[in-house]
Image (cartoon, rainbow, N blue to C red; front, side, top):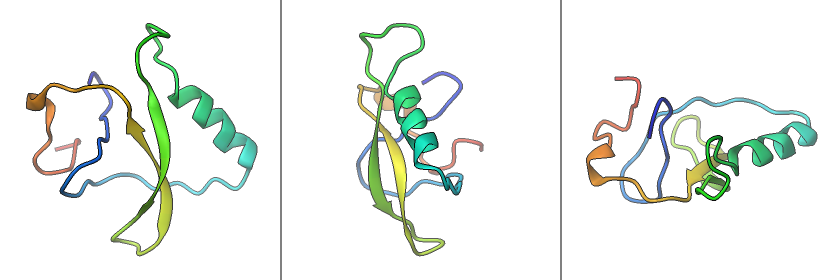
Length: 82
């Protein structure tokens, strides 16, 4: 999906980064940013959903990609940096 990964619903697990956001205004700004495609406003963006983490055991928000991805783009390890 370019230089950033795209999280899709499905089986398996993924590795990611966890940030604490203490200001709801920042979260609203992130929603606006993630919901838009930078190159074409008609293309899909991301939707924020509440998820359960395995480590640390807690609930948090994650952004899921709304569009379709080629099957070959699946990252088997769940870690896009490897």
